Length: 292
Image 1 (cartoon, rainbow, N blue to C red):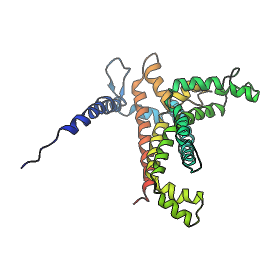
Image 2 (image 1 turned 180 degrees about the vertical axis):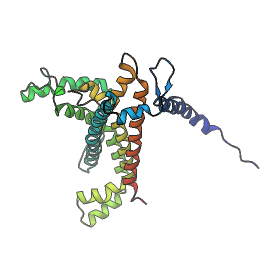
Image 3 (image 1 turned 90 degrees about the vertical axis):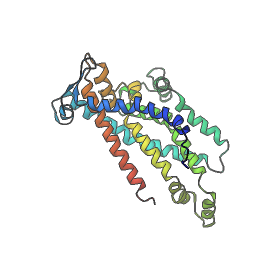
Image 4 (image 1 turned 45 degrees about the horizontal axis):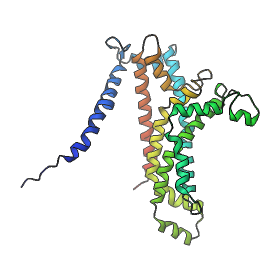
């Protein structure tokens, strides 16, 4: 007798697959194709092969090469600093909240998570007022008239502040849930053996939440490479393009010129995607190689 096949899973999974194909897979494929063309978003794309990539990567006289290198440099600066902050700070907060002596754990979790629900535009407006030259709280406290967004390294600092303020809540909840899932017997055995808090953290907590750490590190890194709103809203890429990240150049090339240069913009986006893919795979390998 043949086993009856249930169609119920199709009704649940089907819409997600359709949306993925229509809004992610097909646009991604077309974007890769566009990166090999000369296209202004109006006429038909003209196939140019690897010319866009050669210009971006090797033509030192080209403006596009300079933009790509500067954008990638600034993006890497953001990634190198923001990712450790977005992993370490929420992990420390999660461990602190889970301490036995802490009361109102859910209240503190809510306070820390709420900024992540605010749109980046509203958050940028709030922090712009805080760092305002004349009306800002920071300048009033320190008695200065510093133009934070127009001076380095302060331009980067305020970008990192708003990034951490708005983003630590999500990772913190993941870490707290993971720590809650660690067997209490392990901690009790460690207490019997006389292990201190630091020893328990590195010998029990960290190994037990290895996979959530891998997940958050990979996802946080991918998100950091796609940074756009914070430098756009807080510094507009300044001073002297010192905080102009690659996504800002891609947006400008594709949509903000008198004539769109979508082929070059697509090539930059593909290269950025490859960098994200390689680094994410490398992170996963490093963190997972000792896992049975």
